[in-house]
Image (cartoon, rainbow, N blue to C red):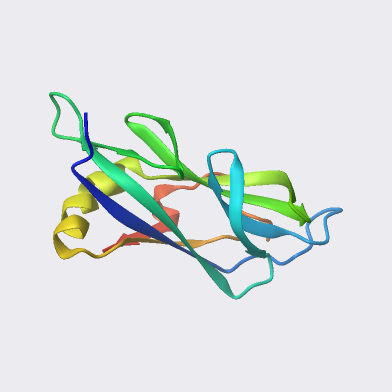
Length: 148
């Protein structure tokens, strides 16, 4: 099986909670590629943009697509991207939370439009939860604004 196309997902993170959480004083947010967190930024930044390149595959016998790439985790039909919270000490990343951005359903709706227009798929997310803490767990679909 080979990829039919590649597309970019731009993840726009807004309303970050700050650099302090519980006993932590240097909170950062980054994109998880495999087991590594990259491009992390301070938790008090005004916002962040992470870009994930995703390969698009046609699923056998279905009218749905599958998505793979270094930032993509999960199994077919349940793909997601991790946004990881942690502290960086030199090259050492100490993760304490992560948010799961589910991509299968939104990309099935938007991938063809993005590929045809050669534009990225954009996900906009507020990264502070209702308690004022770093957003974690599966991000609810109504908390993400998807567009091309």
